[in-house]
Image 1: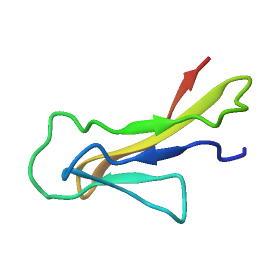
Image 2 (image 1 turned 60 degrees about the horizontal axis):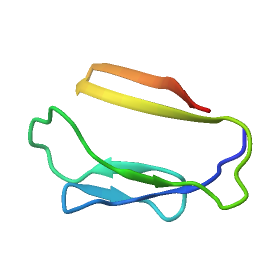
Image 3 (image 1 turned 120 degrees about the horizontal axis):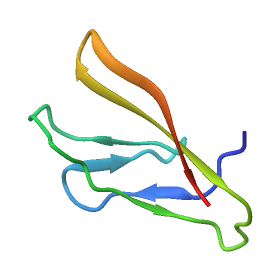
Image 4 (image 1 turned 90 degrees about the horizontal axis):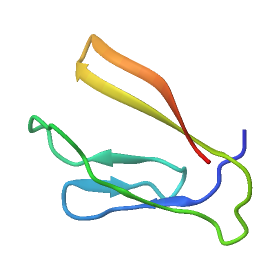
Amino acid sequence: EKEVGFFRSTGPDSRAYSHCSGITHTSKNLKTRVVVRWLAPEDRSGKVHFKVTVVKEFKDFYHAIRSTLA
């Protein structure tokens, strides 16, 4: 799989990483949602797959949940 596009933070609650195509939250506060922005490359074609990891608690997490954007 090839990484394409990049994430951009939408405010103080998120931080994008420049060394990979990742983004994270910035506080330990309980969250019901995190809003981020993904920017596609100009020459995008085909499907894009997103993988997310959701941590409910330290030992209760969901890794590599896959979503597709056509």
